[in-house]
Image (cartoon, rainbow, N blue to C red; front, side, top):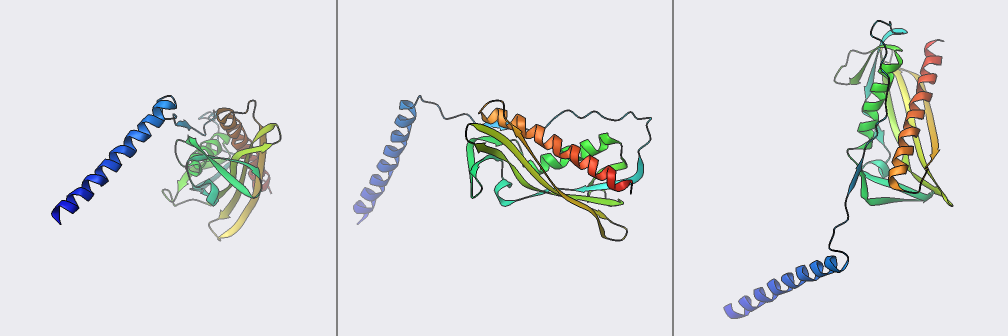
Length: 211
């Protein structure tokens, strides 16, 4: 009985070793290299306001960490050529959760507009007059025939915290063509589209704050 168990264990070990050798040979035949993983950022230059310039509105804005639709809740880049199917790049990824990067960029961008006396992350700083929330509804490569686009769609809501009333909400979408059909150029176009979305957000907030 012991000999039978020992024999079965040896067969299992031999199969495992054989599988490892088979995988190693396959990799060797394919060039001996595991594909490199590329990591990308959502980051573009933002010009900070001059310290001596007073803000347009002496009110504080809190920014809650953005949410994201299920397809965009991980680090892998998304590409689509149909409204009914989403696909992932396995070796091209965001360096961190895209919703977090866009939240941080939104805070930096709105601070630079000099619209508010203070723009801070919420709930880290809870004493704010208004609260901005965002939901990423699209952050992807969108393929149309021979042209690749970066498509970004973000839903925004601003709440007046004094009376808990909705102050403003809107859905902003931008689509920017990629210069080349590569993931790197798609990321460059996504950065441009995010910047355009924040520029549109700035215009919307300015218009509503002046009412």
